Amino acid sequence: MSFIHKKKIKTIKGVRNLRGKVILVRCDFSVPIIGKKVIDDFKIVKSLPTIRLLTSQGAKVVLITHLGRPNGKKSKKFILNPICAKLSVLLGKKVRYIDDVIGLRAKNAVKALKDGQIILLDNLRFYKGEEKNDENFAKKLANLADIYVNNAIAVSHRRHASVAAIKKFLPSYAGLLLEEEIISLQKALRPKKPLVLVIGGSKIETKVPVVKSLKKKASFILVGGMISHDFLAAKKFSTGKYKVSQEAKKMAKSILSRKIILPVDFVTATGKKGDGDIKVYSAKDLKQSVWQFDIGPETIRLYSRYLKKAKTIIWNGPMGMFENDHFKHGTLAIARVVASVSSGKAFGVVGGGETVSALKQTKMLDYVDWISTGGGAMLAYLAGDKMPGLEGLVN
Image (cartoon, rainbow, N blue to C red; front, side):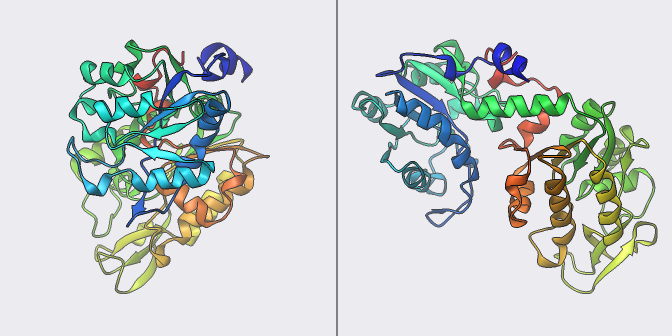
């Protein structure tokens, strides 16, 4: 792993004489907010070591991030005040929020910065130039700083101005979090065998490239969540009341193999929202009159046996509707098994917002070797997709 670390990642750790320099740090602070409070600060906490490193060396730190999908328009729903308040608490020092990105207020705020101080600029996605990867927007952003740092793997698969075009205008480096993400994901791509891949959630189109990429390396691929219905349909099994599109069925069929292990039973309900009669059915006896919301007890036992033999585990996507108490048991059981064999017997990597949220419920987050802050980006990296945000920073 030292080869990946030293030779292939252009990291900010190697840069000296940062005192007085303005460092523009692209973070991912797109976190859940209710009212005016951040309810999950996981991604913010993971970004702190980079910010502390820079301020300790006397740099002037300018943080930039997106929040949600405001589609290029200002929206009170996606304003960053709660994130700024949380940053101030976590860092134990004042972080100023500037309601601007490339205008006069932002420029004046940067000019007023003293060594070691921090400001947070406005939501990048309030500006249409961000998602269009507009070079003019990127250049104006770059004019604020001396050095650019990417610390946000979660958006590094996007060709957006703050992760792609900006690197044309500033000396660019990886932050500490981005560096750790790459090292850990590279380790998963060079796995000790057996490698067990656990995939759940929805959107089979995001999962197929990863399965294709890791199919030869993986010993087993355990499937759960909504995408399990696509595979069941591909094998002409009942999917209960769920309707599977021909396109989803075709995608699932394209990667079916002996390595792909499907649920053998489900926890079901007669109501579409998980209400009504709740009952466990085996996959082969699944009635057309029910909805599946979780993997069943036999599937948990089956999947646990595979996981306990693993030397490397990659998990992305919940096994069911874990937000509901009736249907959380499959996801939480898998989370506990993954955590119990990680940091020792196996090298475990977990990613995706819902997956991390479920793992948190088990209070075993610290047992897993690496918790990725990138959901779709983690899948894209593992699938070997182009990562515009990493170009020039990671070979």
